[in-house]
Image 1 (tube, rainbow, N blue to C red):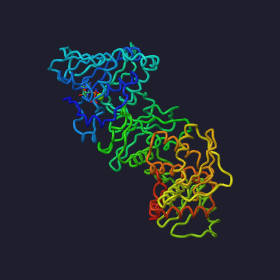
Image 2 (cartoon, rainbow, N blue to C red; image 1 turned 30 degrees about the horizontal axis):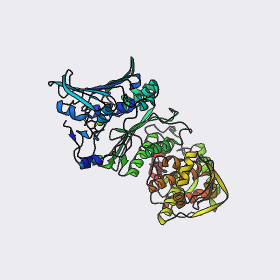
Image 3 (spheres, rainbow, N blue to C red; image 1 turned 120 degrees about the vertical axis):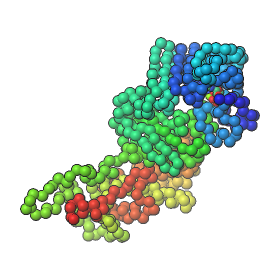
Length: 570
Ligand code: ADP
Ligand code: MG
């Protein structure tokens, strides 16, 4: 490792800012350095929540004498050297500012040894004043001690919370890092107490079990999808495991724990129908993509990133979640594979037609009765509704089973997008406007986006106190659909916008997805046969009618051949 001082023009391109707010910020920066140094085990010790002392010991690639004196200077880093390096950062750190910032507000001592057969050295820095290097004793690796944080900024020190609160922040930072690095062994102590002990883990699942317990680990399903250069992996909880907040959700982008509103939102959407409001899944999700597709130089504490193609990332996550959470009732084969067909005929019996399950039979009989007055355009004929959830369709090559909600969602979504592509979406007025209730913060955000929303076919009047009147809706929707279709989407949009500027198109995508979902026919809605037929025809007219905007399948087909095989017709 060779540390250099960045030249002024490169230093200026680095998104600097307030880095050290509290002990947890120090802990985060120090453990990031230990991870970047390729340590195999990292030990952290805090006293009094970290305000009195923070010690981080690692066994990574240490620093020699020269590096030790450089590392505490501003813009001193071994991780980047040229402007181009900013476009492909593979390390957690890259600004060369953390140690300098810490050393400016605390008493710091760093002991480091680059190789086991070399001598160790130490430097001490107090409020920016460097002493050393002196020879010291320790094996390969680095120890950083930070004492009396903010001793020279008493006003700042007074703002620190109770030791327990401060420790909790640090502990969360360490947990997140530990989840991002299963191969590294971690220990965290607060005074006498061991708060975390996680030996090197063989897998992410093992690491999750170390941190959240075996019970949580058992309630997880794996994620695994790769598309358009984006790989999504990790674990999410089954719907029967839930949390009261989002704290146990972690996204790692190329190994870096980050917060990303849009990704959290995709996660929340995937669970929308599975969890009641206020319940959140556990998730540890890794997103890996080429380094040049992610800008990590956007947030002072490096907690957020910007994607080159954020839609592709969101779609990959949505698809991975969809596959993992599945809709077993949609995707599972009608009869489980490998189980012999039960009704074996006895010798001498005539070949009996196997009976359809009763409810299917009832649906088919009802359909036959209704059938006469329905006009069929094209090659598909709706023959009835199953469980008021699936449409049974006679297709050109067998039976097609269509999820009525997802199909309608897709039709509405594509319709909205097609209209948007032509310009402003045509609007229709309610006779009696619909009241929407938002939080005060949400209301402010929505008020600021009124023009954009109008382009999306949504006319709102602000009523005050968080209330809006929805006057106009996209005329593509039926009045009945529009009445129920906006409270949730507008809430979500406010939540999304709270995350900062979002490109308008991404917002529209989310908005349309939400509207389509909220306004679409639901599972459980009874549909007359002519409406079933119309839905099927609208669906087949789309370019891609196989999957919904989130990648869920819409149609499950049983081919004529399969039917013949099941009934042993040959
Ligand atoms: P950055 O991590 O952005 O490069 P820092 O101020 O955090 O900046 O650290 C400065 C430099 O000091 C790093 O680039 C690295 O070379 C060295 N360094 C810091 N901590 C360690 C450590 N635990 N082990 C080895 N080298 C370290
Ligand atoms: Mg660093």
